[in-house]
Length: 205
Image (cartoon, rainbow, N blue to C red; front, side):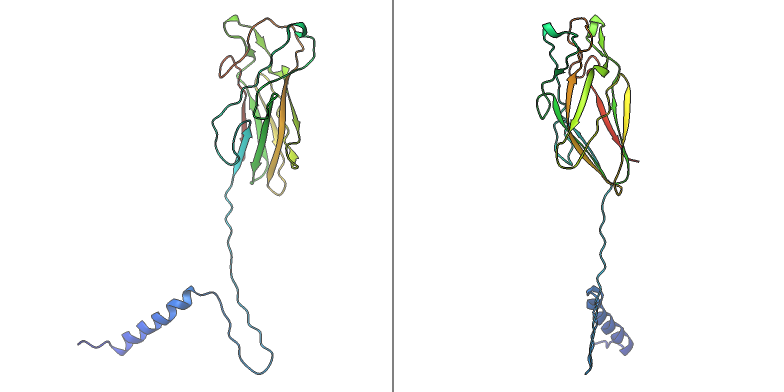
């Protein structure tokens, strides 16, 4: 049988003894007749990912949902263009209202509302400006109320100011049709047609 050299044996023994120590937390051993103090330290690391979440309407927090809500305004014949706002129907909160949430953790966030131009009624060629649809934010939770970009025939952008680099704002956004003008009869907008869609975008540098 081949014998292990004393040097090799000492190295192997040292490695065996050191292995458990490498996995242990710090420790201090004290002994003596007087007052004794022993300390041990532990280091921690917490990794927080950069996140950005936007919800307008139907959805689940911190998840992607492809549902698009439809808000409908039906103007009574006797009220066309009388400058009395018309409430909507639809929305995840019903009555023309939607849940609106923006959350991010890396500084100020820009929030924009974009359209492809005035709402139209298709082949008839008539239009209604997006400025005729108003958005009123009210408290959803006890947090900061999320302001809404005014709707226009292009893009409107606002800045959400972060507190300690965090934006955590929400609101109940209620839409209404201002009904300020007498316009030609017809159905304006729709599901993905006739410029009837608003695209909201939250951006975090």
